[in-house]
Length: 262
Image (cartoon, rainbow, N blue to C red):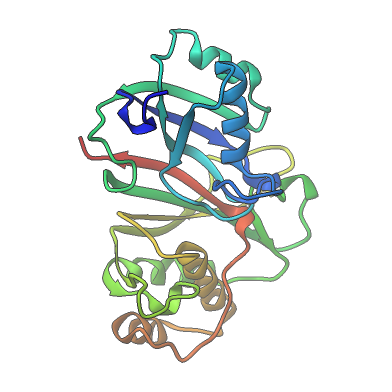
């Protein structure tokens, strides 16, 4: 057998998945992950395990994706029906969107130009439990107008140390956010979804661990009247916050889109 990395066949596969029953993308021993399920399916289709997959992002447990990208390294050229066979054998909560052969110089981590995340949430009275995989719902009243006005202040290059979990000395905490806004949710709808819900949209070239969920958690506290814009500005300029909080729940977070440089 030739050395694994002597192969000249590289593919970019885009998938969608509902992450509610998975412990994130990255494969882990004795734990159900999206990568583990995808690899198991590819092995079944190819009838061997002489391949490797690498994802564009790790994603947290229960996080979903509208457009997740993974790189497939393999020994043989994929047949035209590979995409169809993949979807025939993937579970119903994972769908392959496209399979494209790429150049070996492509790097799924370094070539990621921008990632767009959506965080879907609502608030008010108790909502239908069927919506739990798709949004976070708070049984209280939030000042949504104030949250909308403060969200854009995350835009720019800042020190996000206070908004990244386990951000040690070696962590990259200087991050750039190109868009941060809250809009009404007209995209993720269903009879079991609340009549009114919202989406936090965050875009940037890369994010720290739990960063988007921590940004959402801060805005929840703004909506509750516990935190304000001055505290946000100080935290982003110094990296030291006067407040302490955990990340917002994972189930409302969706990796919406990943753009790559050519």
